[in-house]
Amino acid sequence: MKTYNILVAIPVFNETDVRSVVLGIKNFPLDILVIDDGSNNGLKEKLSDIGYTYLITHPRNLGYGKALIDAFTFGIRNRYDYIITIDGDGQHEPEEIQLFLNEIPFSDCDILSGSRYLLKRAFHEGIPPERYRINRRITYLINSITGFNLTDAFCGFKAYKVEKLKLLRLTEYGYGMPLQLWIQAWRRGLRVRETPVKLIYKDATRQFGGMLNDPEARLRYYNDAIEDELMRSEQNGISMRKVRQTVGY
Image 1 (cartoon, rainbow, N blue to C red):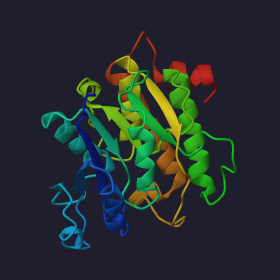
Image 2 (tube, rainbow, N blue to C red; image 1 turned 90 degrees about the vertical axis):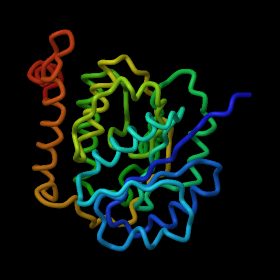
Image 3 (cartoon, rainbow, N blue to C red; image 1 turned 45 degrees about the vertical axis):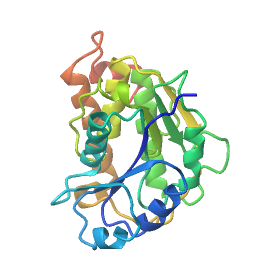
């Protein structure tokens, strides 16, 4: 049976739970990459005794998207077969990595995306209402463009075929990068499937920072990220205007 090289990548910016996340991942025989996106809370020292595998350090905060882009670049350069991404804030349970490992090698998808909403349960419990509302609207819009039939466009718990990541040209450094990724994945013909993961909100008061703390400004930013990607390379004449007309958005 073939052995696959798998990297677990954790983007981190001042998260306090990252140590427990790394320790949980170390229960699996997987390489670990921490991308420190300019933390100022002594992250390196906090992890120094754990023996995690790799660390990328940004001299300043460059953005969630940039951290993931660097993880993808690292995975490609080091010839991994799969990359699993997991957030460092404790809102994903490391033991659920097994859900993704059970699917490897992927036979019917190129991206296996975690979804906190795939199972029919109490979706709203513990979720800030404005975050749920924005997630629903943007997920609906992404589906209208791509036909991916996603239920959660923003979940950071995913697994990717590295060979397929080579087809993408991701440039969005902020929280809108996953939306750029969905549009590019659709344009490049990548196959996408979801798998249910637990819904955990440890801190409902946590902020995005800057203008994105305002829900309406955040929604406009996400829309702009989608529109910018569509404008870069329109597919079959599809534009944001046509999409909005089609879905009544």
